[in-house]
Length: 141
Image (cartoon, rainbow, N blue to C red; front, side, top):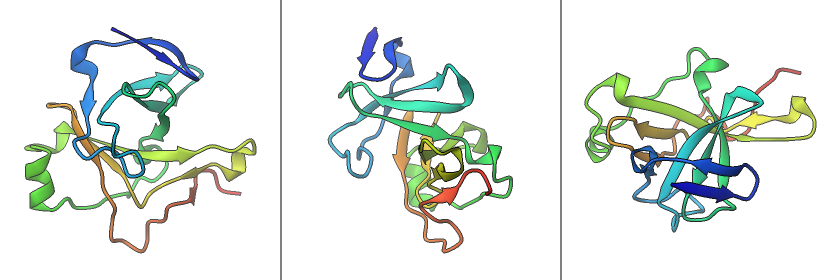
C-alpha cells in the first residue's frame, strides 16, 4: 500500500505496519491508524504518520537516546489494555517540537507514546510525574 504524505512524499507500507491507536492521540482522537518510519536525513528521529489523514504526522524520538534514566510504570489496567506481556514488546517514543533554532527543539517527556510492537497497538499516556515536562530541551544550551 502507499500513503501520499503532505511533507514526506509517498511512503510504502504493509498492513502489518499499521499501528492502531484505539483512542486516537490527544487532540487527534478521530485518527486511529498510523505507520512509523525513519527520517531519511536523521535516523534518530522518526515520523508517526496517520494513514487516515495525509497531513498529520508527528516527529518522534526514543527518549533513551538522550535521557538514559527515563522511566515510568504502566498501570496493570494499561498493560492489559495494550496486551503487553513482556518488556521487550514495548516501544516508547516521545513527540518532538521542532524549531529553526536547534537549541530550541523540545521533547515531550510528560506524554510518552507506548506501542506494543507485537500486536501493533499504541496509546499516548499522560504521566503524573513532576520531573517530566512537556517541553524538555533536547539539546542543552
